[in-house]
Length: 151
Length: 151
Length: 151
Length: 151
Image (cartoon, rainbow over all chains, first blue to last red; front, side):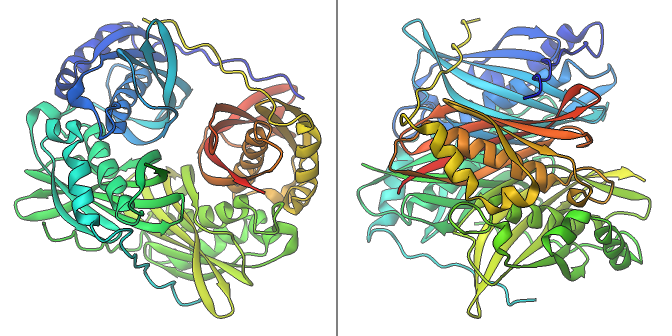
């Protein structure tokens, strides 16, 4: 067995990448509607948090899959954005979202992690975890493709 | 070239499948939060509609990809549900969602269409269209896997 | 319910798009290894065919999912290629492949159909059908993202 | 930020899980056709290896995306299989495969890693790496859904 490839590390695409993520996030009205806030921004990774709300649930009282997907898509998109040069916008091309367990908890976090940062295409994984009684549990997993377009 | 396989048709999983979709949908709090309503329920297909709202947008003013995914996931899930016997619940296992064009419009529709209804696994496609000035345009395409679990 | 968006039609990206598909396909050594041939090339769609071979199967004697994915990926990629200008190469960015039924048959066809042709990103669906005793049956469904890069 | 969920560990589904993977793999004719061999089998993870061959390439001389998908699908399927009880067969429901970099190298490895093992549904990630001049590089990433069916 060959040695595993070393985990990728990423350089920020611009010196003010943290501020740029916060500025763009502040314009995502839907994140405000859901009650999402930024937890962490670092090169190649962004973590977002969402407290549980009963008006975000599906028919069984779990968080709707569309909500965990929204959270993961934004975390993935901003993780990609941290690697992009200043004159960039980030667009979601597509994402694939597996539901791993019922999304039950007091709050939820999505952590986006870039796994490949090309000039145009950035591939990102995002894990959504539920926090319940002090325990974190993965409830959804996304693999997403983001695109840089010139601003 | 062989003749194309005939388009699949599906039998309702229970006589009251329309009512069952409406009953379950009424319990999806998140659909109310978004402002989604049911347009059509038929064997193997469900169409949902969502008027544009500024509080559902991303940083460029388009509908957030998570919103079109939520709409498509519910349409796909209920399309699958129409094919299931009475003692069933439907769960999203996973979905893959491509963004085709900026989600700009006065209103949006997602039409879920079952392409394969197994006993446990149901595969569904869903197209999200934007309506703008009387013209419909496809803005997102989902391919999803739904699962029947005994109620 | 709004009227469904009209089915998309696509213009060839170059006058000699049929020849270009055949030329590129002839260089895909793996297609020869599998025994795949081109059935049809038209703007936005390509159909490929593969006779059954026992050395392409998985542990239950069905065609391996990787084989139907290979067939669908090439059909999807060349469907995208028909829409691209002459100075283009086509790359698969990603694909998502659902297995619908055991891939049992005398031969198999994959039909790729572009659903959105952007300048850089082309989204394609591909259906793999099995032919058995004169009947065609869908056995796999792909949704893929292709990219144009300048040659 | 909540602490990250601890990485999952998995118990073997049967005492002879290693032998069971080898036995089933030996029946996958297509793996022989490609020249794939098993590198490692452990609870929740399987690694497969494939030497480069020119007859497995696409039009640019890289390994065909269908080949890396075949390798990743088998690694993912057998990783899932290690977690299943003795009376089980494993079926691929679907997979999503991102191409990260041209698949150029002397040999390739796919490592499947279960991230969620349910009774019926098992979710797996698989990374395909290329080995070139002693260096490993990730060239493809899969997220897959496997299903247990009673043998």
